[in-house]
Length: 71
Image (cartoon, one colour):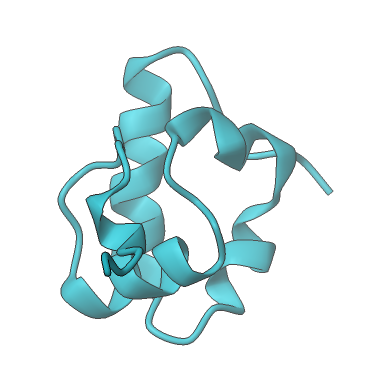
């Protein structure tokens, strides 16, 4: 019997810390485009995601002409 591993899903997220990567995966975030529907504050509420992770995500979003949702 195979087990489902969320970390094995296709992702285009940048390399960030392991705790942040796990927190994002557990919350269902695997694609940068998903962050255009949530604010930075929403993501910061996830245990394991901090200011550095938000900065890295912002840089990756900006490189694609995207951004976090505004309040």
